[in-house]
Image 1 (cartoon, one colour):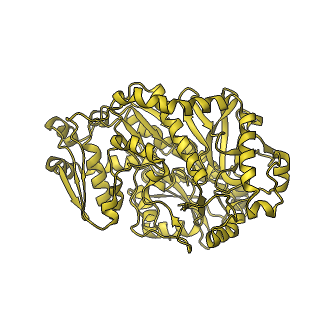
Image 2 (tube, helix red, strand yellow):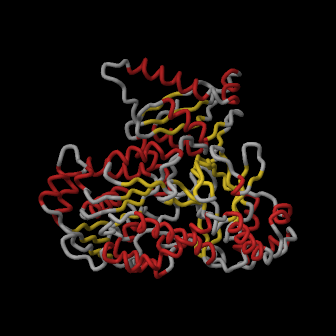
Image 3 (cartoon, helix red, strand yellow):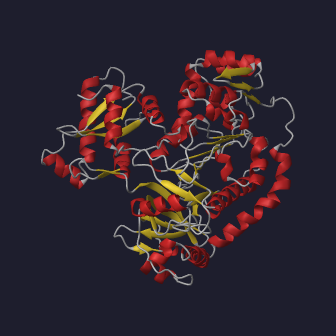
Length: 571
């Protein structure tokens, strides 16, 4: 769900959709770029600055802002079948709105969304649906979220505010050369029965056209790269295009561990990539990519036995990626590889709506209170408004957005870190709905993440998998134990398994299931290529590489069983 809307380079990839050979020409780094960011900054900042100023002003008056947002959303919702079903009126205030409409999940709305797709009238939304976005959840069945012009505009305004904040606070950005996360896609795209597209061919289409044109010169990877179907080819082409750009300044990723995978690929295949870069051209799957040939000094850096990443990309100044919840450790590892770069966490961005965005001045994640109406459930399931939240407390988000979802329980948990202006800043803590229940133990993702942090395996990859055997148990899949020299591997593994089980038993229901003999003790499964095999499994299922979630607990039993079967570790 998170990060589905990665914006990629808005190049013209019509050639690939038409089935003709595609050729990408990258501008040689040694040549002057028509639009250098340091030159363009004084021109574009005046156009972007009002959006940032208005947003900061709204953060000074959250109650007033949220009231105005709700009034607009209620007025539209009242014209839909869904609104009329609950007798909603355009002038209803918050108390009346909350009394009439129930809290819902996607399952509660699935019939309404099906009817929306079948008729394309104002069933759930008050505007024409432009397309449906299919979530790529690895823990639940797919969902189809209707996208209206207003919802698209919310995402666009979020991007404008973020961009304006960067230009305002990072004057050291000069070239603006950017890698925005790209994932391979299936060549098959579907539509609803009435011909509405499911998903977009190019993620850049989430942005207004003027913004696409503005950003186009700064992206170093073309969206045609997504047309490569073989994972090895995709990684190879992506690595070559990034290595060819010495003046790369910005990495905008989702899951930071995916860039770790790319760096491992580069390290392991540096001889092949060295040859590719010398040629200046790469032909893969009917696609041709041309790029500047690096000089001998740069190629020598690539050929080193242990590549120095800061020397390979000395101009990287900003890394934007997930840094919260399950991504925290992977983000820290990536930051250590590029110590000269500013690491900025992504805000909370779901398929359903943009919810928070990072503000440099705020030193945290500000809620997008100008686009979404927020409610929050506290630990006692009491509803709170935005201005009623307390620092240090955790809540579950309930949102009402511009695409027809009202009082929608997203299942995302947040913690109030501090206040900026008059508004609380919210850090994502994990999926509240990610619960595994083999025998009534009710383990959730956030609890498991805390356990793994305390277990301190120091491995790069780890995820807890439920094993639904006759005698069920949990298996921690990891890529390495990182044992000390001369350590007894069997004894060390047994000790770690005992510690893991002890940590999990701090959950009351898990402990009860263990005491009753419903669950066996947790086990460790060490597979050197665990992370790669994990990603390959979900890619084979049809997920885009960039959308595979960083999670501590895999709750889908079928996925866990299939994954372990592939690894040949199920007894």
